Length: 507
Image 1: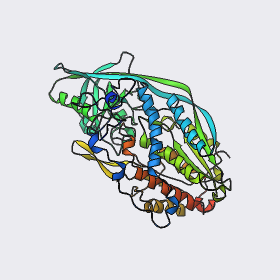
Image 2: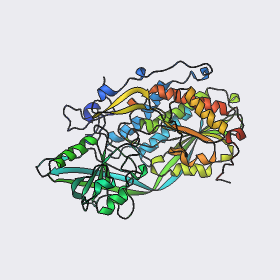
Image 3: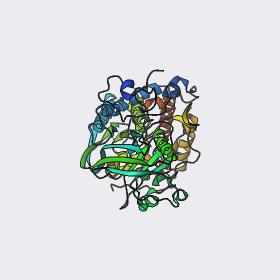
Image 4: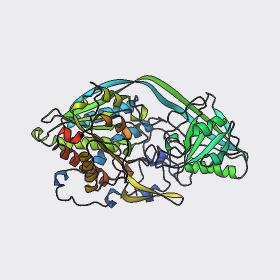
């Protein structure tokens, strides 16, 4: 197995390569660049190992779709994220307002332009952008054992420390539920909470989003100095979820890997005191410049099929959302090869840069687009992911593509078309669809019939790498999307929309 260019494991583990060793030519020492699991050489599955199936009768129109070609596009986008890491960015990825966000938008425009689509850009200003500029932490046990905490990562929108940092005595509170806190003195403590995925890197049990543990009321109001969520994923990954405490009692809230968290837990289990020091600097960047990118492929009418994809990411963001961007580009390639006379509706592709940072671009699109012309919206987001399992004290991969959340709005006929087509094209989904669209689609679905699939397990983590985005899943997802679009092209706007009147915000 060749070394993985995207992964570096924690230096404190024996015989484990650093990122500099695994990525020849890296410009700076990546002491904070970490990945998981411990035994990647055993767990990465070659794309050829995933089961694939012959096209069924009636699916031959989509034999041009090649999941390997889509995956090659994904690697162009993750290369931008890795460049930000090579440039020494601790808060790394395709972050809006940075040159890496602009590089991503430019690459989207370039790929669409090569296919002959007409490109327009819609500049906008993000009024305020939360941006951590530097952080670091360490521990010191009464026995004299000390060390850096290399996997610490700030949770989105958390509070900074004072400039001098914070040093506090560590306390382990289990999963942080009310029974774990009975009789515990949290005043001035560094509170360690064990947090499980429910089901993934963005939603975890110690987040308000999960509805399991409201850290704002249970811990910060008890006077904690800081919160460290020990993420229950074997290995030494880094995580940037949501759910940092807000309000007047909020304190700095970080994630840490399970391996480092258990190191602290085991020190505390000996009965000795452990001090944790943390420094976290955060900027509130104002009037940050960004832009939406639109690409148009004319049809025989001004009715539209809108394909949207967000372009920002934390870490490599291979699935979230390089998979969606690459799929959108390949959809454009498929339709650009068809004569305009055979395209009943105009195709509009929207690349939106700040999904994880306020959705200013998406909301601007909602306000300025004429939704009366939109027949259907496809949100191209998180389209293929390896199915993972927790396996004893480690992770286990499989040669299966993970099931996705899914959503469809519009007429019952259209919703059934989406459900049936996903099944026909081997796209596994949850039994129960979303009641309300998640992801970028949430603010768009009220204005036009919409659909998407969206995986949500290892996103917002360093595990979201191209190695875990199966080409097979990319191919079948796109074929299903194309079939849905082609079938809706045979339907009138009224048939797709149904009886319910949809609002048009620009009227």
